[in-house]
Length: 308
Figure 1 (cartoon, rainbow, N blue to C red):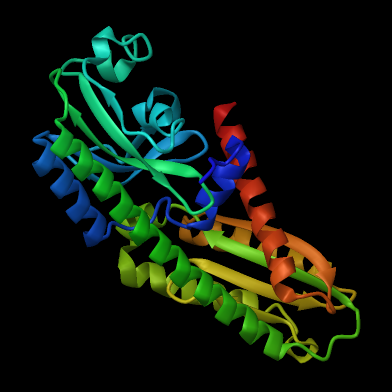
Figure 2 (figure 1 turned 60 degrees about the vertical axis):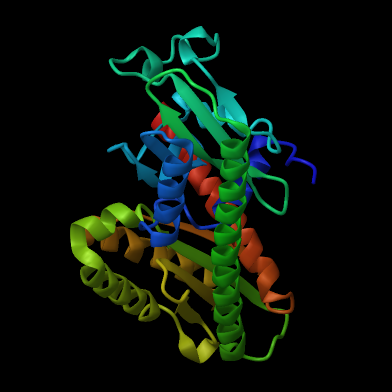
């Protein structure tokens, strides 16, 4: 397996997993508990490297949900996707000696991280362990950490597969609603709720679900079902797909974006939107993939804005 050649493509692969900012899950919590126990350390993490931050899908021994990416040990680990990275004493390592996570009181001394590598060869994060004193893992512990990383990757792949299956079902439903293709215009619009974990903590699971149902209804009221337009929510997620047709498709897409802005303001939520134009006689999935890329571009722009 060859590594993904550039950071942009690595990030695109991570985006396709729809995992960053999701709710805690027991399976990942079990993995960090096992990692901490086997390696006899106070801190263990399932860490994912997003555009400008390191986000923890699961954590043990830390209160923070993530860090800036420029101080993340894991950002160094993913540069060698097939290798376990160990730092025995960070104060003696020129890469980390001045890192604020090391120089802080009770700072990091030991780190070991095994990259999470996707079938495309993209290293999207790590399973890692941390200690406040210098040390090293023995061969048994190293093998166990590698095994836990492989197990984590299988969980992530299964999650991605389930999401992709739901997307295909959503697109099939939208395709069935379409009028016979006549080579007319088509717009696919994606709407993705951001920071799902924070939104759930604030509104509760039921409150967030009610808000998303209301959002879907609001968008559906602005499309023309008689023209074959549709708005469908990807099952169990904060992602909606709108398929619009005809000469007024672009105008309808703008109306949906305006409705999204109002929804954000009323509910204190953040939704990213992206569109892709095409024709009715091309595969719907191709237009969806272009919209998905546009959504990643929107995330790139949001991260660039945060940096400046």
